Image (cartoon, rainbow, N blue to C red; front, side):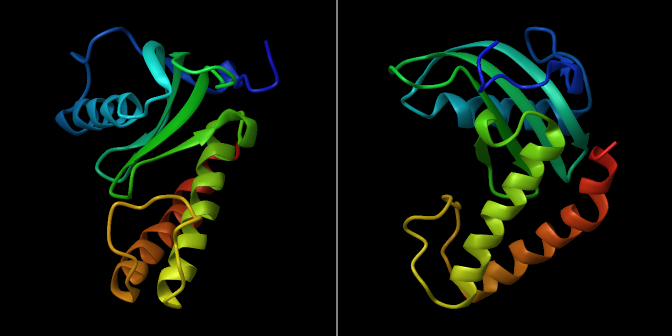
Length: 155
């Protein structure tokens, strides 16, 4: 296990395919896979794990993949739901709690910059314009996650 490997005791392996679970869960899983596969540094997905789900709100997936480029770690968290999709490198979080905490922190940087009219060029990419209105919407979702979901993962 290299330093970028996650704590697999904190996740649940998912069977191949996408036949189990609610409509929301299947859609989130598909969205997470598509998001990950959209990156040029991913060659093939080897394994999928579920770190946390609150249907319709947030899903924390862990993927093991075959890197398409050298010096790319083979594990990454993908967070999707009623929030912008993003990946969190396992160097920054070995558990779903740490991954979600890192996600919230990175997105809060975007919210702050967008709220203040600053550049978001060197901040985590978000799939909406960097306006104060979008910053307020995302900020509210992040506060909900921080106050209500993150404590459940801290176990």
